[in-house]
Image 1 (cartoon, rainbow, N blue to C red):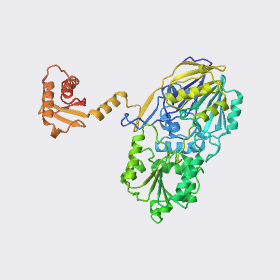
Image 2 (cartoon, rainbow, N blue to C red):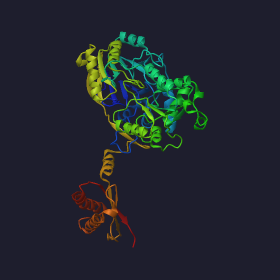
Image 3 (tube, rainbow, N blue to C red):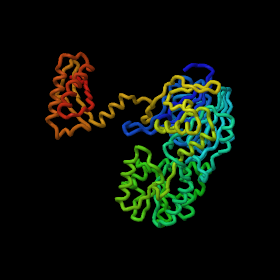
Image 4 (cartoon, helix red, strand yellow):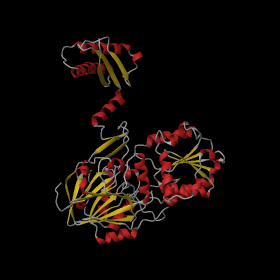
Length: 551
């Protein structure tokens, strides 16, 4: 990437994927970062907690970083902040009030100390030497969601953040007038949320969900258990309001649910604090006075609803007249685990409601096709780069842009690391910066390599064989080798195979073609591997261990 007077725009995460959002605008010696998210690992990433962007470019250019600006408080936009701060010096983080509360809690949980967290609202203007940052209010499933307008010497860049257009929302209406005003100035490049680009029409209003839930509450006389996204603050808000209207108290289960409720109460987004009760207080109420609000809408094995469905939760035991509501959509990849949880609930004799054409108990916080068109018309950009979505979503959104009058040559469907260069209002592709996935495994960031993940997959699929050999200082073996297996075969039921592996290990040790223990271990692997595959058709991880003993 050339270091010239052009303005550079690129993503370190969020392109060709849903999550891990991180976008950068760079002009000379200034970098403005938008969002720092995570993505949750696919099932094949065994033992991995989160996937974050590769921060190498930011580390190499951290003297240029002026600010990290957060659009809203969802995990795929703020979840990476603790890891980013452990890697890169960030002068200031600007975030809306709700996001600030969530970020502070997140930093405290990770024991990361950071004092330069600044709250902004839609009237805030950030001025740097080369660039100016403004904000406009959007509608999403969490309060204080904003789009961002960055004015540079080479043109105006608008990024929408996550948004939808809801004319009857639970919270504030999006500031369409400001969007139109920004569009009237002349926007060079628009980056717009593509998550629901494949969905036709308009997304359903949150108030319609409110009405559907209210109807259910009025009719049901037993306990109501609701599983929803803990981050969907507006859904939580109208569940609270509905409970108040129907004389129900709320029990909360799940750490993320409790945290989000607490932060929302502190920020004034949820009132009626007295409606939340403890399990002991619930024992004094009748079933028609109780609502249980919990995590687990995606069938997560350790989440509250899964424990309740399994009958393993120590505090909540299902009753025949319970009603369980999944007020959520199923994230791609989670359909099987959600289905298993629903089946377990039915087996326990409770009634289950999921979102269908007949029960409008969930709506997305992301714009569908017609709303994407409206954003394109309001901002009226010269160039368009879809972001936040898998490739098929980005491609569909680019096609929508063409339908709205943007020349096809002025649309850019990019991958993470690809760079756009903007010069005097003209945008072109220009090179790449380093980008990729970094794995977070417990407290370790980036220490788990592809080789480690390969070994984990081998162990998960074919198990492990451990060959322990006792050697003295003269390289003489003492006793028989000890063969241990995990996830491969049961030793007691495969004694002939184990004996053969012991004999092959003896052969490897007595082979004169080794000079050190590294050679010896390689000999053992070379001798055991083809035999095991020939006899079992499996390829376990073979781990030779040489124990030094004293005579």
